[in-house]
Image 1 (cartoon, helix red, strand yellow):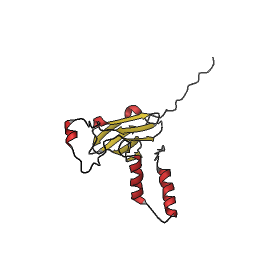
Image 2 (tube, helix red, strand yellow):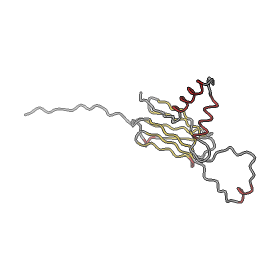
Image 3 (cartoon, helix red, strand yellow):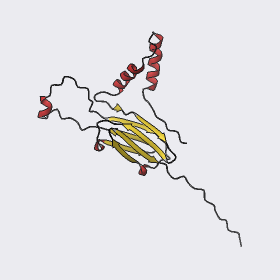
Image 4 (cartoon, helix red, strand yellow):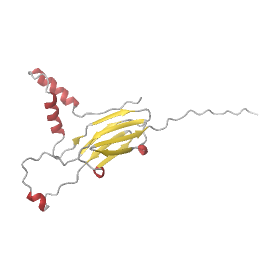
Length: 160
């Protein structure tokens, strides 16, 4: 089976922060720290992290990515030289529209910025075979493996 490399850019930072805070008495920051670092990584004006599950089957790879609130027109998927990239972005809200000017928010927590995620799946997958669906906020991608090169027997002619 091929190995799939998923890179978390903040894993090293989380690890170091847990060690540092552990030394001063905080045993485990757990979800609070994860929420803090995701808030730093994501947030308004920055790309948010897309949570996903990725697993291999006999025929290829299945990807489940959580994209609540996005439509199919707002999601872009690419596979190039073994790197799978998913990007989703809502259209920018125009602050100049009369409707937007009338709003007086009490709380504004819904982020309308981009969300993206990339991972290396290797070069053994066919970019033309990607099939995807988006249902109830779950993007499901199926990526088929490239057909393996079949051994071929070479016939050698005898000299006459």
